[in-house]
Amino acid sequence: MTVRAAAGCAVLALTAMSLAGCGSGGGSTGDAMLPLTVPLHVTVGVGHVAGLGDVLVDGQGRVLYMFPPDAGRGVTCTGACAGTWPPLVIADAHAPTAGAGVIAADLSTVADPNTGARVVTYAGYPLYRYAGDVGAGTADGQALFLNGGPWYVVDPDGQPVTTEPGARS
Amino acid sequence: MTGVSRRGLLVGGAGLLVGAGATELGDRLSSSSPPAEPHVPSPGEELMVEHGVLKRVLLAYRAMSARLADGRPLPSGVVTDAAQIVSSYVESFHEGLEEAYVFPRVQDAEPELVRTLLVQHDRGRHLTAAILTAAGSGFGTAAARSALRADLDAFVRMYEPHEAWEDTVVYPALRAATPQRTLDELAERFANLENKQFGDQALQQILDRVGGVEQQLGIHDLATFTPAAD
Image 1 (spheres, rainbow over the protein chains, first blue to last red):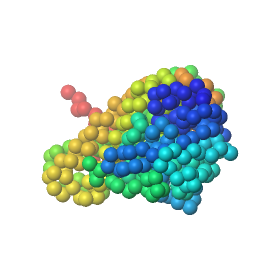
Image 2 (tube, one colour):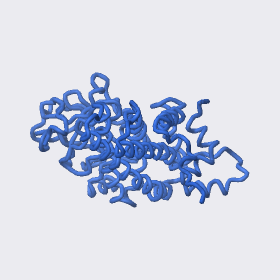
Image 3 (cartoon, rainbow over the protein chains, first blue to last red):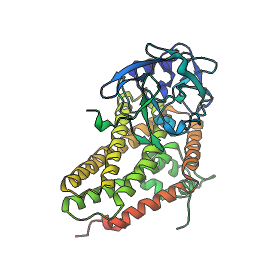
Image 4 (tube, chains in turn red, yellow):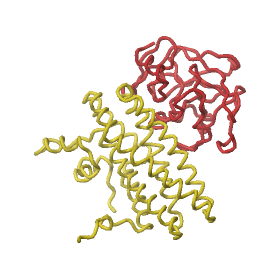
């Protein structure tokens, strides 16, 4: 783990800095302007969010989202979009790990146009975090229409959960 | 109006930049006479021009709120126009730049402030979604007008201090923590991303849209904000 990644995990910061995750190892990206470390190991698990049910989370319990415009096109969230929705990246030639409740066969990776690394996918959907989720277990980006489309959490079967925030309480 | 690029405005428009309240610009401008080369904007300058766009939308939101409070009608489409500028230019672009390139560089120096700014970005996006929904429904009832006014006021109340803290704390911290060469590359990156996302006349087009909103609300003439002499 890099020092930068360790600091990001300690404060649960959710900017591009914490893209590194809290796994071991990692390296810099192909973009010197992005101050982040790409981890060698990434785990995708399942967490529970009130009103949304069981949804995919990263190794730190932070909720993961999918972006419908990505369907069939890979990672379309680039540039400023990737600041707000940091893709769940992993170093090239490394495979993500399935946590409890996650279907390992649905995990894969796709090229990341932002960093030159890989982005973890589930059931074909590239996975992202939301910068506005400043702690584990929140899903404040749910159904938010931003950067040209809506953003949805993903259930363990690989289906987007389209519940609107107002319908959750 | 003749199209002007962001870089053209920034390189040639020193008055605009000083008007944006950039303290760092004073140093640069005062030390650059006569300039040997065109002034190259810093990333902080790029972001503060975007804050200038937001400030003008906040003025429009204030004017809308005042009309709602007085029971006066709002011009058709003006709420949607203003909120879409915020959604597309501020929330889907400007804030993403901050979250990708700025906040990670000042996280160690200002961890609590960065956390607060991230939370406020999120709250702002939800307020904008509510404002757009209200505008789409026509806000014909007193309750809907009251709710819209509350959302407009909440947005203004949050973003005035939000951008003030970014201008006076975050951007100076970015400059302090970042080598000059990287700052130059960041400024170039911001300009390129804007061109890619909105076209090379993006800033002028956004300013024209803001001007249209101001015109509809009768706040398009800067002189109307000047207090009368005794």
